[in-house]
Image (cartoon, rainbow, N blue to C red):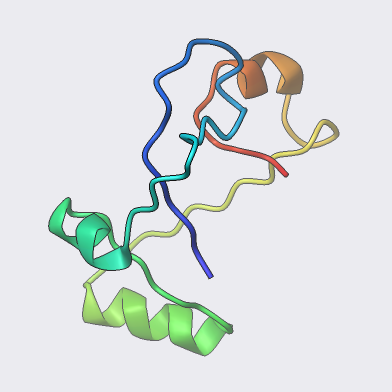
Length: 84
């Protein structure tokens, strides 16, 4: 399940969760109103259905790991993607 929350606005390591205290969750309905799409994809067939429904004609895949991504530490520090 996806989880989303309002950020605390504190500067620092952008990879940190930055959750408010107490946490202010954001629902899927609220995200939908903002234009954020969420799909549960459990297999390749479901992915292909979504691509067909939305007329997506392209696909990108990226592996974010030190052995696959050049300058991993720099990119990780300057990116908005979050690693667990």
